[in-house]
Amino acid sequence: MTKVVISASTEPEATTINSSMENYKIELTKALNWYSLEKDRKDAKKYLHQYVSKSNIDAPYLAQISDSEITPTFGWLARIATRGGVLTAKDTERILVYIKSLQKKIITKQATTSTPRISIQEATVNKINEYLGELEVIIDALYKGKIKSFDLLSDLKAKQLPKQCNTQIEVWVKEKITEFVHVYESKDEAYTIERKTLVNLIKVLGTFIPSVQSYCDFKKANRKPRQRKAKPAATQVKNLKYKKSDEELKINSITVTDIVGAMQVWVFNTKTRKLAVYKTESASGIQVKGSTLQNYEPELSSQKTLRKPETQLKDLVNAGKVQLRKFMDNIKAKAQPVRGRMNADTLIVRIA
Image (cartoon, rainbow, N blue to C red; front, side, top):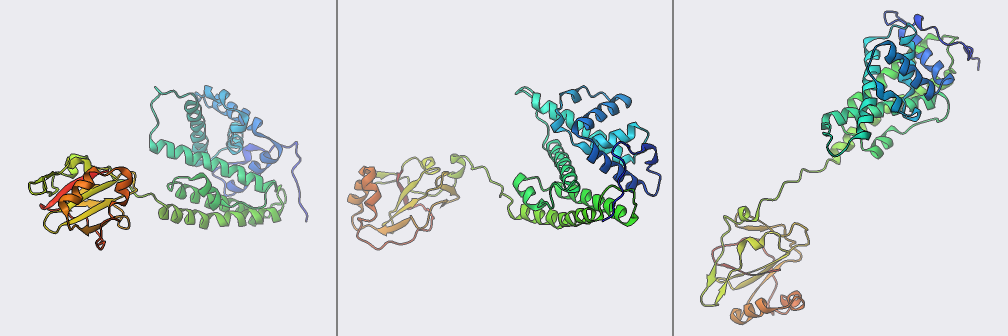
């Protein structure tokens, strides 16, 4: 395959890049690819230094950024602007936003406990800008033939990027595809990339858009349900109906607020003579809503009718931990499922 390559020593003429020109994107992409092949991150950092100096931008923190942390594309854009190229307002804004993101990176590294935390919105924007910078590096690797493909969906899942990044990534991808399609259709013999590589770039970028949409669906499907803060015990039990004491059985209900958070709750209905045990393995324990016990495990809970409640309830109150585990099994009656409902005839016998 024939390919005409610009001499490695010939830096692209920046003044030929003007946002008012019809072929602006083509000329810009050609220049960016030349820098990508012939220069490295150290050069990119130097170009950014020159840009902020010429533009009178206060950015002393640049010296604290290591070469490996620099996203080369922004260095190339800065170089073109410094040498007389006229970038679009959007490309100029990209350079400024990137320079600000470097400052925030340094601030984050130097932050102490007394330093105010940035807002969630700012953190999200920073994360998105960082990732777009990583994608620029991926495109550079594809262009140089270091990699043949890239699974964007798997990468997004692995890094757990916020769902808000989808729109920005999709816009970025479409812009990149447009740039490379323009270059492909121009058939410029001075362009330094093989058409086969160019086709592969467009093909890989084409997979990015459905990947972004799939990631959006993935985030929706795996969104964590909002956890409600448990109400205080006193608030939960304020409307709970129960029997405070029974003179015939000589039993008083235990402190009602102790129900909330308990792993076991034993209650006895003096009218139906049914003893019920509510058990849970949840870390939050038994909860109460109105006159209903909640958050218990139905398969671990049951109720049985007592034949001699006076004796059996006394044994329940005095039972040790081992005896308590077998207490319901030792009652000779048919086990029935519990419903969680409490009423004015229900004594709260024991809590564990």
